[in-house]
Image 1 (tube, rainbow, N blue to C red):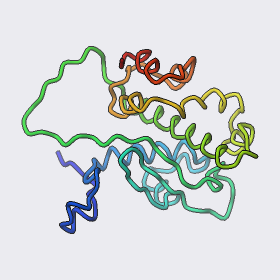
Image 2 (cartoon, helix red, strand yellow):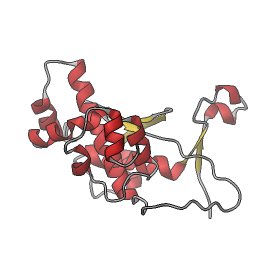
Image 3 (cartoon, one colour):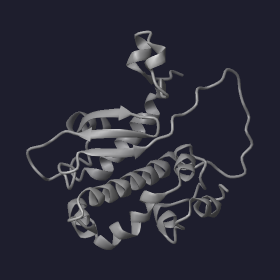
Amino acid sequence: MRYRYYVSHALLQGRKGEAGFVARVSASYVEQLVIGALRAVVNQDQDASDRDLIQKRLDKAIVYRDRIEITLQQNDDSEAGGASSASTIPIPFVPTLPLRKGVAHSPTRQSAMDEARRVSLLTAIARSRQGIETIVKDPALDFGTIARREKLAERHVRFLAPLAYLSPRVIQAIAEGRAPADLTVTRLARNLPLAWAEQEEQLGLG
């Protein structure tokens, strides 16, 4: 089996000290997060292949310690929902640890979260953060404006807004697939406590 990685440009040039915290990441992991976010925010091209969607819509993706920032290509039309007016999208990100040689067995008390559910949760969190940040930057905007841009019901946007204030530990658990396997966006957003410790306890991470 072949494993693909994205490697820091500084590391490739032998400047290890400048490579930063994320020197190497799994290519498939990053690509799944980026493609999931693209399909969540772009209303057109839903039938396009992953490759075509990236070539047509993605300008660049930058990996940071705690997030991936994707920048959409600016199009002449405005049929991509709110994408053209908010072209940079942050995706919560936790770099996977390098694999060790040999086989490691780690007992688990619950089944692992499937990839589609994990990407769906992380994308919903990213969209909620983006919406809140947009309103903070421009107080003249409101949830109704965000809903119209995203072509969603305002009640739905308001319902998901608390996801912008999730505990970093909860986001990390979702990113690593350690959150409850049956966790959904609706379950996560409903009755979400404000205190991070209570959020973590509610999901069994306390």
